[in-house]
Length: 374
Image (cartoon, rainbow, N blue to C red; front, side, top):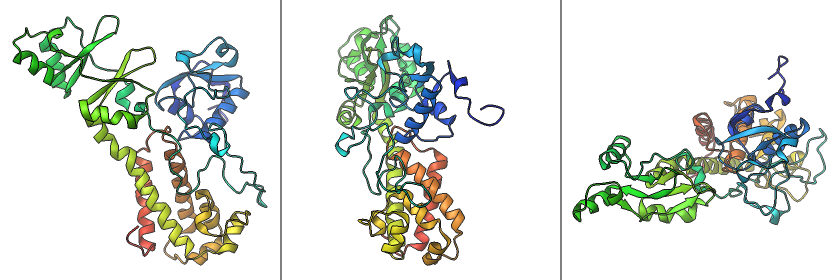
């Protein structure tokens, strides 16, 4: 930030930082379509872009802010500059949305007539209530897949490999040669088999070829059966180097982080629809959305719930005397931001603060929604 408090975009030239850190310069917590579009446009206006692409790759993966002229000569690790238009033949971390007529890296143009205050009826980049996630999970969603792998060399002693495995609680350890080429994997099972067959206790004799290796861009769901069958998969970069390991323990540890926000957000949406649907009718809906085809609360976008309640007269209809309107609407806005990030996955997991926000908010709704089944 400059002395005046405004972002000095040009001052970012030459910086190396994570995608999360870059977004933080714009006070953006989650990476979604609208966020990428905004940051890329501001960078482009300053003659800058990012390599690799801001829209593609792990949220905590490093990128560089470079001048557009410098990026024309080539890109880093095969990624196009962040400010360039997406190549439709390139795999990106946003699912192809061409079937619904919009570019995945651009805000939604609803085409609706603006409200009297000049704001569009639907907020850019927002997904309809109840829409399934727009991004397929990739193996790189796990930090262990891209954070580097602890390994040993073929000529290291077996006790060294076993000591590392015992110290770190590993069940397997990749074996790489001096050039970083994968030679195999040592596991507790392969060590036991080596001893059972009477071979000399060396790393080379303890190697097993019973493993799978996938690229860091691989989709997660097809890989899960491999992890379940072998207990792990090795993860490689496009250049072939081992970047990490994902194990069954990683799947278990991350399940709550991945799945829990969806369950809580689903409950929030269901309870909101019930609470608001009992009170607000067609006239109220049309005050926040001028599309006459929308007549019920459950046809509104999530952000339109904010506009529906951010009005004193409409708030009184809700008859929640124990809840302050300004505070509730402020919480709802924050929940909307968390929701939009979660719906795209590649914004990263909600942090502890965002998760606690969802828990607090659904707790409020449970107190006013008589349907205990959620």
